Image (cartoon, rainbow, N blue to C red; front, top):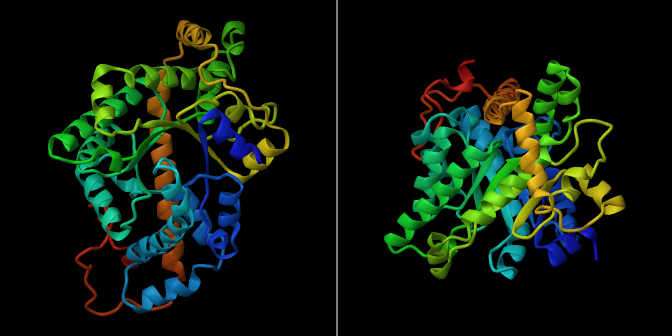
Length: 389
């Protein structure tokens, strides 16, 4: 038994791969990783940009799409959909064999839409039409507008991965959106057992931003708090999850067949050499959670990772740490806003960079008279067709 299998079998935590590449689909790497305990896949604009621009695996399909008169934006989404569809097929046995708890592949809407609730909803609906498989999770950023989108989409029976969560107040809003969405869905006759959701709480990035602020303060008291905020906040997020999914309100929905919206620990790779390379996995192990892992973290965890239930250990100390951070001037809500803005900007840059790269690769001139297809991906009104750039 691998440690990944042990993580799920003994602790109820699902390990998902935080990567998706066409090479892994072609050479059987993803299938092998699933056989060794990986139970889901997450992807984001940065991952797809790295995959598409870092190999020639997409060249043939891209050339065919250009020859067929697709715009660069349309072609990009066809590449993404192709990879996602194949990954969903690889993960489908996990989905079918595990009461639909795992076996998901997450695909994110365009990061350009993060502050446009209506456009995000339209993009999610489009992805669900194009990738009509039950183990698809549409990724929605946890912006204020994203909260609205999540509630609307859950109310329609969509399965959603809420991403870029960095603060406890926003996490509470996301749980409320999930519960409210399920209540609307069931009120209209929907079967909540067909709806799945995870809330992706980012970890290591929190330490990076908080430590930067602590080092700017440069007091002994502030410096003593470095490297501790991320895990503490995640433990408090798990406490919030446990509280809100044990109420009478939740039990009514559970009685109708609803599943909890599991916390997902994202950004689990360490960012500083002084940190143990498995710490963000080891310190957040517990039931009804997901941990997403890049390949290097998987290898490190299998080699020397330790396993014990930790996610609900030391919660009072975690709360005390939050108070100490506030006392030295660290506003965790402000930290969350900064990280949310930075995360969206980073994803949007990756998205724009890959479109620019594909535009440069497009050898076929625009087809005269080409018009956008009826069911093309929604794009921001701020964008123009990449061909004209």
